[in-house]
Image (cartoon, rainbow, N blue to C red; front, side):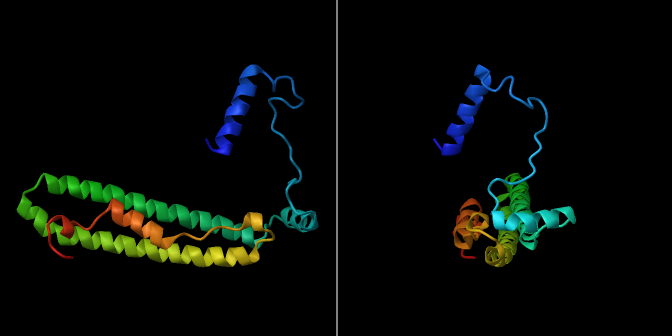
Length: 168
């Protein structure tokens, strides 16, 4: 069991036993002014930026990377639905119709994979830049393992030409 799961289970047990009842501030949102994990040397700079309605550039970049990752996941999921629909249509058709459509389906698969690889490479460029900007190692991001993601995609969506015994 992962550490986080153990902690969450223990918190649930304590809640059920009533260990958190009657604490000061119970039922009200907590007002946390400072990040206890923040580097004290950066605290004043971050407070000035916050009061000015701004945030450090690396925080904006983190948000942008998160948005890009979500967009790449949506591309994958959209293709998954498209492929499922196309395969459903093909299975209701004749074998001849299927063999005619294989090239189209494989081309769409290859275009989607190429688009995802381009997105992942761009995200990795942003991650590299982010890692050079962040004030501490705890904010660093790991780059996407493009080869691993490519293999996952190819495993989930094999070329259909191979199913028919033909080469792509």
